[in-house]
Length: 288
Figure 1 (cartoon, rainbow, N blue to C red):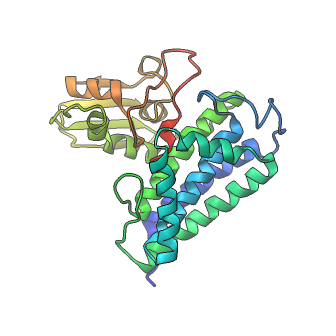
Figure 2 (spheres, rainbow, N blue to C red):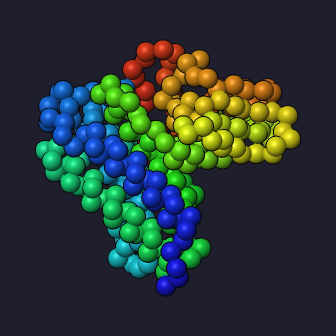
């Protein structure tokens, strides 16, 4: 077994801090329409459904991480995939509904177990089989990529929860993980809509909550995207409309990208309309 992967450990540490903050927000909520059963901006999803979805995806990811280690684990992963194949348009909502149809205390305990189990599974895969990728609903992913994707999705669904509860999101510089996926999925944002991505490179330069700068892309690129990291994260996870965010684009390709930016896998998300719209599609969370 190799030494711990420092990059993976860094992402898992940030993910644990993020999930811990969200846990603190929901742990003492009443199990009623003022708390766990309160509607969130995702149409048809209450707080419980958001947490149930996070737990379900953690379980699926942990199962995928173990699928490369033996036939029994692979069979468990294949069973998850078959559910998705049988109901590609509805399995995400169905899993969230099923997972949330339990007492809130049981759901919270399940989520705590699932996220700890995922971290252990990713560490084990990275240590026992360096360079191995785990299967997923899209392309196979490295443990680091999966942990980063889990950060992105947990942040996005956690934002739905805090927005519903009227709470401050308490963001920190872990947002760089969302920004990383947002920048790296530029080509996918076009491809999932059947569009050809512009070939000109884009420099992304964002200000993190601490005031530090996060950047991606060639420094000398003519096309640029700039603004607060939190606004870019909201844009690429489609949690806010571009018109309501302080993210700017220089260049036609960069400008077009910001109109369709999508950090999550799956079909094109419909996003949110400008200012105060409270409904979005929920399929974006299934395949980070």
